[in-house]
Structures are given as structure tokens and as C-alpha cells.
Length: 201
Image: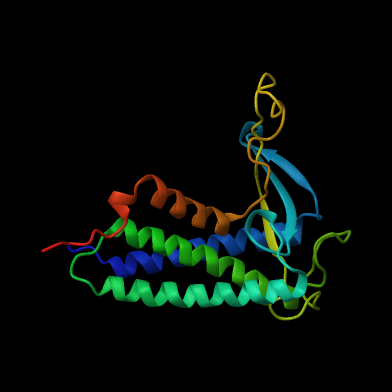
């Protein structure tokens, strides 16, 4: 049976979006802000924080910057969808390329959902005591904060100059960020296998 790349792309996007949102809503409605727990023998730390800006906790330009960032994300999502649809119509399709595009699309959409809806659906933003509840609102449209919860709890060996004892990678991120990062790393490390190769005559 011939593989259906369109179904594959849709499945990846829906899977990442659903898992990302389930985890975010669970963390937001069951963890107090800043609460953390070690899992996988302490290799991962699950800690509830909220990110008002870009991926991995980076911020950009306050409220105006967040509007600009959210609009840019929506434009990027639209461009990826259009490009993905065109790619799926080609006779020769690189499935690895489709998978990477789908991961980036799902990751971008997952974080946009937070900024679009979470400020309207929940009664408080990050940094307040207690556990968030459904109802009310803490921010207008496109000003909701992105829920982050995953942190690698891996430290540099003590003998490493200046870094010894510090976390190897300290930012806290989410599943949507992970999907984008996996795709970007795949593009960087396996470009010849993933990126479409132009044919020459």
C-alpha cells in the first residue's frame, strides 16, 4: 500500500498539538507556579513556569513585543501550511522533510494556542500563588503566557572550568518547543537526507 504523506503530516501535527495541550493544561491546573518534581531518576525536572515571550524563556519587548511575536508566529504557520501543501502535491516526496515541517508547524501552533487562549481561559497568570482555575481571564487575546515545564537536570562535571556544577542546559521548555528543536537539529545534522535536492539538467 502506498504511503500517504498527507495523512502522515496531519497525524504528526495533531499528535504533537494534542499531547502538548494536554500536558500544559494538566500542569497549569495541578501545579502551583514554580512547583517542581524530578522524574526518570532525576534526569528530568518537571517545573511549572510561564513564558511571556519566545521559546526557552526568552522575552521580547513587553506587551507590544508579544503582539508582534504572536502575529509573526501566525504568519509563519500560514507560510508553512502553504509550503507543506505544495510539497505534498509533488511527485517525489521526501518523507523526512515532511516530518520535520510537520513538527515545526505543530510546535509553532502549540505555543500560539497558549498566547491566544490561555489568558482568556484561566483566572491568573504565572507567578501568583495557588493553582490556576478555569474561568475568568488574566490577559487579553494574544497576551497569554506560554506554559513551560521540562528541564534537563544534567550538570557539568565539577572539574570543567567555570561551568562545573552548573546545568548543561538550564532553560525550561515544553513539548511544542521540543518538536521544533528536533526538526531544526535534524535539518542541521542531516541536511542532505532531509532538504529537497535540486535536480540539474
